[in-house]
Length: 127
Image (cartoon, rainbow, N blue to C red; front, top):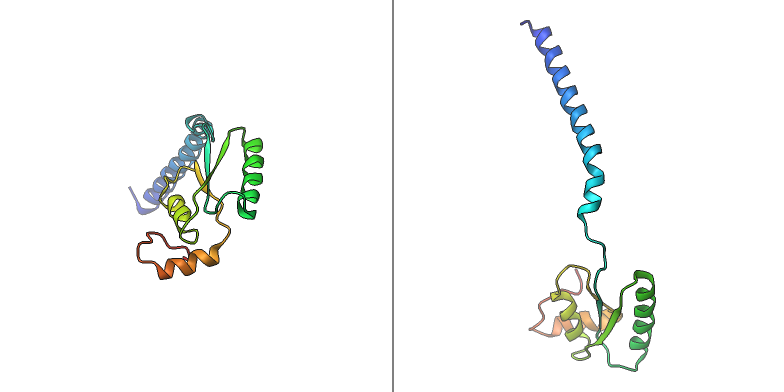
């Protein structure tokens, strides 16, 4: 086999493999849609790091109601005040990254100042 024949054979083989890869990807792409679960399929928890009855709580509850209407699943507002919003923020930071725990973190200034002052914080608010 000469060098030219080998180059032609190699180019043709690579082209066939690339073509088959594209066909395989096109045929299996619709199957990936069926493999994923519908999100959300259970209630979502919204952590509000503020006491109930304040403006942060009122705004977060309006947002929770709108999200529940949009997603078709309940969004439970859970107030966790304390330590200048650090307690609620820590709960959100330590939650599983599955999208079922969200936070209404509106006061980043206090969180970042408290995060610098406290030694027990296990999250970074400014990153």
